[in-house]
Length: 93
Image (tube, rainbow, N blue to C red; front, side, top):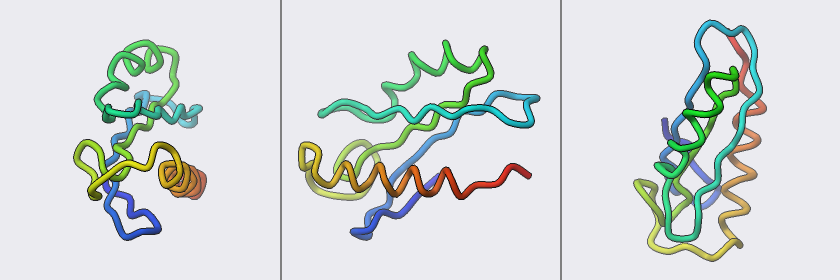
């Protein structure tokens, strides 16, 4: 899935959801400075069996997301706010 940040970059995202649950908590995985959302795989395998979803994304300038550089936290914090707001606006159908 793609979520657009406030600078016009497409952020590549993945959501791993437990099956058969009507509602569940969601952990937002934030990758490291030179990483990408694939780092979350090691967490997914531990959380899904406990009916905890994992949302991960490539910050702008990393992985498959748009952008040419990382800012070591400045713009990444804004990307996270966009992600949190988007997740909080979802409704389970």
